[in-house]
Image 1: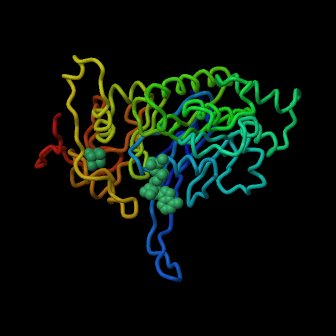
Image 2: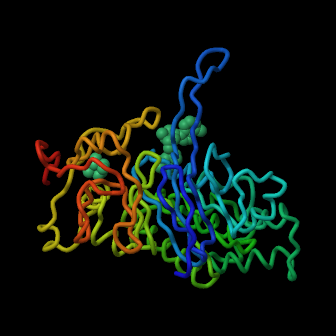
Image 3: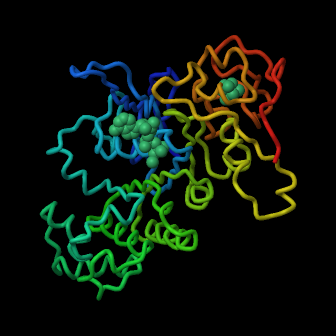
Length: 371
Ligand SMILES: Nc1ncnc2c1ncn2[C@@H]1O[C@H](COP(=O)(O)OP(=O)(O)O)[C@@H](O)[C@H]1O
Ligand code: SF4
Ligand SMILES: [Mg+2]
């Protein structure tokens, strides 16, 4: 990484913006209004995304992981401007696109593409594969040297489909092949950033690896940058260079893949990791499964301060009153917790740039069960 400048996000935490960032998300928010009565008076808001900041550097894959409902898809839709942010900024190649008009966004639509989860509903059943993959050329008014058909056939071959199947319809393909069609469509206009929302979770496990491998091959071949959203930690581990963990609209941990998987610092990440099956029986014996107590609270009324405090076995008074900032506690490893796990030597518990910390564990029985 090269030089970085600093901006301040809404929580007051200093956010390093890498100068090689293709995408920079700063304090991004989406609050969906909840209305009541005929006059549709606003009575509250679903805080789906509540002040998140991260960069995606050129050529890397950032994985965004978290339980269902934590705001991952909303994040993807905000960045692609399928949804209008209620706060914060989205900066692409140095341009603030947060509230750019649809007209001005049009050329950018070529650069940022989205792959959706469901390869069944995201492809128009009445259009041929040729028409689906060729649509971006027509929409953007792009002429290709060899003609659209030839260009589309080249893309079909690139994603491992038979170019001869140009005139077939989506229902003639399997789930994995349909996702390849969805991927082919995003590649037509040579995008720079691809946001993939659960790109393999609707597929059979046996097919998932093939599609993940395809995404990796395409990244190398076409110099792509990915933001991959998934609830499945194994998929994220396979494909990501860095990983951001989300909980109830916030990023709670962000680190290089290896650091996050080998020494997670946030108790929520630790709990998520403990649920991933380990193939090696020796390692399996060493590891205890952490079962989180209770359900994920509603984003309509999230717990104050640390949002994880209602389910955390390390909770202390400070966790209920002071929001822990996403602080860099180890090189390139940021975590939002007053009492992080695997904290580097010299880090004092409760000292995350706030005051009033105590030692964890006193008076609290662990809310962990082994299994
Ligand atoms: N259009 C919407 N209106 C109101 N609430 C929404 C809307 N879209 C998503 N939400 C809510 O926002 C939260 C985050 O949703 P989502 O981003 O889809 O989560 P994820 O992709 O992580 O499962 C959920 O509580 C969801 O119900
Ligand atoms: S801040 Fe407190 S409640 Fe939140 S994750 Fe850390 S220890 Fe748990
Ligand atoms: Mg989702």
